[in-house]
Length: 113
Image 1 (cartoon, rainbow, N blue to C red):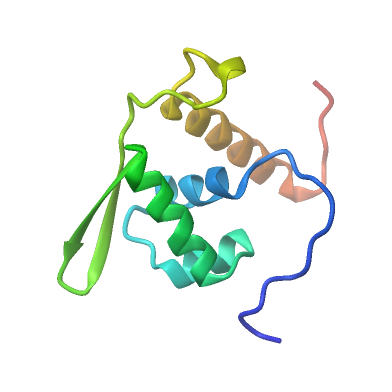
Image 2: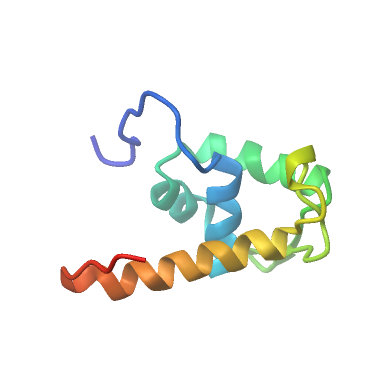
């Protein structure tokens, strides 16, 4: 069915919160519908995640006409004690490098590091 995320079982390396944050970092004016499709989540799940991120100070939201504009608060520190000292900006930079590297490998050639 269109609009319904594929089922997933098991664990993943990235949380849904990180996926939504990365989608916002890529496009601060992205629609909830587009984030849901990109992250393979329901729109309601994305709304809840955005609410969590706003409530905890990782994200601010401004209404511009009919569009929401999201701003990631760059100095916010990741929540887990093992990540002490790492900021949201550090995480997003790592994910951006990964996306850039993945784009380079899209030609079919894989490189060993």
